[in-house]
Amino acid sequence: MHVKRFADTESYEAPNHRGVVGLRLQGFEDGGPENQWIGYSQFLPGGGAGPDATPFEKVYVVLSGEMTVIIDGEETVLGAMDSCTIAPNEMREIVNRSKHTCNMLVVIPYPDGKRPGAA
Image (cartoon, rainbow, N blue to C red; front, side, top):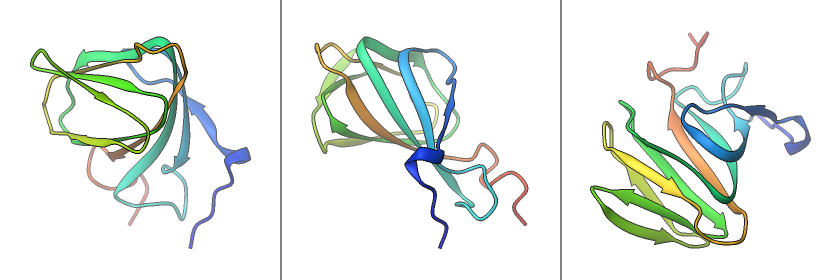
């Protein structure tokens, strides 16, 4: 088992994101997950990401607040404990249109499918 305390998380900058603080909960460390990493994103009102696409899928889980996810011009609002999967190469934009912070877990595979430095 690999335990990482919230107090030990480190922030990270995600490309093409705005109005957000991201913390890496798990991943990119010795003993951590080998196939994916987990981020905790705190989006301020008006914050968001995209539009853009990545070559790997992502899973979003809204813990509190709400997030609008835009795919092909169609908008879906995710509330607390709602989740979605963004397919590889799917163009997406996310926007926090509420007046409250949106707290969200993000599960993303490592770009090459395996943790850097993993055997």
